[in-house]
Length: 430
Image (cartoon, rainbow, N blue to C red; front, side):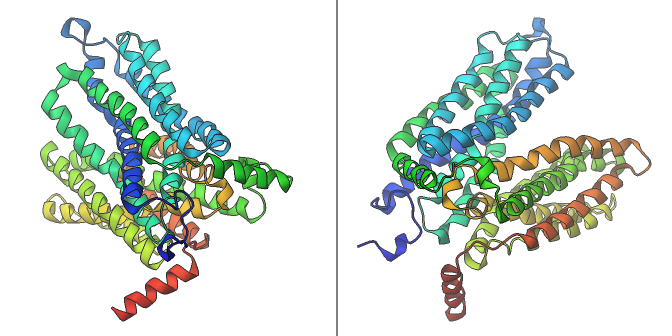
């Protein structure tokens, strides 16, 4: 008889909790080095722009920006490609293919590292693979555990981005520019290892995926993006993409300009500005997991409070002066803490749509927001050179945080009534 604690588990119902955790660790390994791959360019860039006589590649700064811009664009395409593949052959096989693809394509530019064209091709191909990770890893992890744990699990995966930043910074500090190849290999070798771990420890969803496709065919349907966005799910889907877009635009327009504001407008030293900025990362690491716990305990929409709070803290940030260093640090930490509101979105976006679309829904709902930010962020950044300046950018940031909160309010709650009532009763009785 199925254990009552297995309620909501889709994959590997016969697995022990120990093996289930091993499966989650395998997914974590893929996801951690997926996050790290996004930032490895930051550490290799000094070598790229250095002249060849100094051991560099002789690229211009503009060329390096072009290399990593094409990677970012490719993630959007990769979301569609790998989402479609996962809906046909299963998420486990797709995630293994993605991990191997990340490793191979990351290695490609190392064949001729001074070739600008090869770097562009390589990072574009890597971007395609990176685009498939969120939409494959998140629902795969969610379907291995009961619903009451999914927000926390998604938050753990999301918080790996903060840990990857810390890991990358420490590694770069230890190795320096001369060991740029080793930095690249730390993106390559672990993904091969991760593919092996996923193969052995993550339950196979091929039969489940096949069953969903057969059921859809019997109803005269196909599991694709067009059918996913039918009826009420069109508006739910658009709402999710708008929510993600608001998140990317609001957070990035603030975060990308905060240190410049502290340095150029308020006159802080680089060390002070860096300290204020870095403490935000610590807040985020805690916040992702805090809001993931709250989302599992009280509902997927409760963390919208955090999104609204971000607007308040951005406003406070703009009202502080050069004498308020300690307050800046406190506000930066709290802002990071509340930015963690998005930590459980991998689970939330999976639950917003019928189970048969679990391979498609989270990736497009999350990465679809990048399409909005791709166009919005350059336009917003241009305001820095106008009369509104940096404060104008921050005002837009807080306004978009508020707009995102409103959008979230209209999206449905997905934590099942049974789980929600049970957790509420547990809270009252404790």
